Length: 284
Image 1 (cartoon, helix red, strand yellow):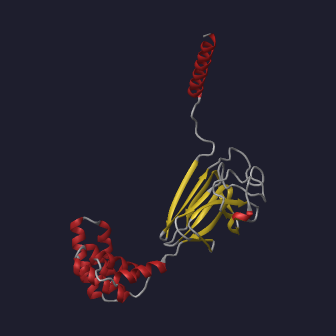
Image 2 (cartoon, rainbow, N blue to C red):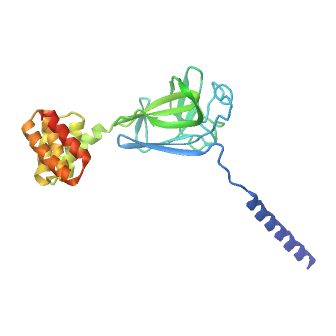
C-alpha cells in the first residue's frame, strides 16, 4: 500500500513539474527566423526556403563564416531551392526537385552549389558526390550593410530572374531561367488547329505572337476571329494594337474608337489609355 502511495506521489510530482516547466517557457522571436520566397519564372516556379541570421555587430565573412569553407547559406537547416519544373541555373539544366543550396564564400569569388542533400542540418555532412551543379560568381560590395541575411529574386524578364544573396556588405547573384517558348508554340499550334477553338484560345495566341514580335498577320487573323465572336473593349484593343503595328490604321482606328467608347462606359481607365495609345500610334 505504501509502495503504491509513493508511486502515485512521485507521478503527481512529475506531472506538476512538467506543467510548471511548460508554463515557464516563454516564446520569443527566433534568432534566425525562417523565410520562404517564391517566384514564377516562365511557366515554372522557383522557391527558396531559408533562415535569416543577423549580424548583431559581428563580422561575418572571413570570421563567423570562414572563407574557403562550405557554408549552409543561412542558418539552421540547409537553405533549399525548389524548382517546380526543369530550369536552367547559371546556364545548366536542373531537373524539377528540391536542392540544398551550399556556398563557399571567398573575397573575390563565391562558389555556388546545388546539392541532392536538401534535408541536412548545416554543412557538417556536405558530400561533393551529391553536387548537381557547381559554379562560381563574383561578389559585389553593397552600398549599405545588410543586417539580416537576405535572399530575393531580382532582374525579372518573362523567362529569367536572378537569385540574389545579400549580407553584411557583400552581394552575389546567379541566374535562373525557364524558357517556355518552345512549349508555348507547340501548344498554340495544337490548340488553334483543333476542330473547335474558343475565342480565349485565339486571344492568347494572338497576344503571344504580338508580345514576341512574331507573324503579326497570323496574329491579326486570330484577333479577327476573337472580335467576330465577342465585341468588347478588350477584344477591340487586341485587334487594334496588332493592326496598328502592321500599319493598318483604318482597322486600328475603327477598333480603338469603338473600344474607347466602351471602356469609358465601363470606367476602365487602363483600357481607355490603351485605346488612346493606339489612336496616337496611328496619328490621331
